[in-house]
Image (cartoon, rainbow, N blue to C red; front, side, top):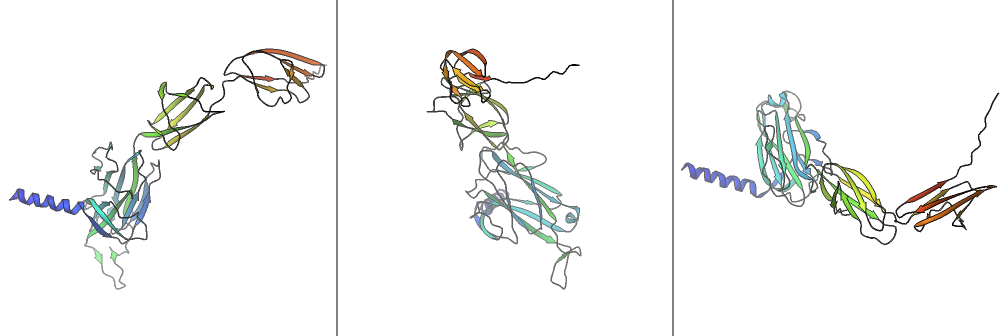
Length: 336
């Protein structure tokens, strides 16, 4: 007989929690969790209030943590409150809309509890674990609205005093917001990395090493998931110069690197006074302010300014940049 009763209770609970029902609310506060945010959002509501938490279903979020606090005045007021949690809302929650169809997934009594911490997984691949300080709820599949609805329900009001004005008072004072709520996302200890490449001409193959290991890193909006930390990237190619970048991966955030590859052809930059003339291999350079591409091998550069002439030779190598700078200075020495 006892087993039969327990079985009936189990069936009742299954029916109670697994079917959508109409949920009517007195008030509704909306909490939106921004991407990559780890900061808690704290607010207060009445014992009959409700709030909805919306989140984006990114690869980084694994759960939502809810802390419900009651102060001593609330605990001693005779009010007994419970909290019912719903998912699979029939539409995205709106503060002005106070009626929804949703599925009950959990209920907890706040009676004689100063604080309750709930961790609610939002992905089946979560790594959350039960602890002495929080209650881990079982994972329940949600719909595309990505919202959780929390409704507080006042069970007893032993010390509510009637008032001729028609306004209920608790302990002789007007109702106040006496339930404190804190909401924060629980992120994986991972972030994302994407690399946007730019090329001087037709794109050619570039190999990327990430902390010394070969890696394929997509361009945005795609990304590679990585553990949080510092990384060094080296870009190698047969037709471009090698490039090196460093970046930091933060939890729940996507880091984008923009890398412009440079041609392997040797480059000559010349910085000389305007009145000077410059010759490269006996050919006068018309506009010395523009970078000059060189062929590999030996080159002669001659600079003439007034009656002063200076000549230098360089051996151009692939992937190198050569800077020539000429300064004309006047020094004044004063002696006794």
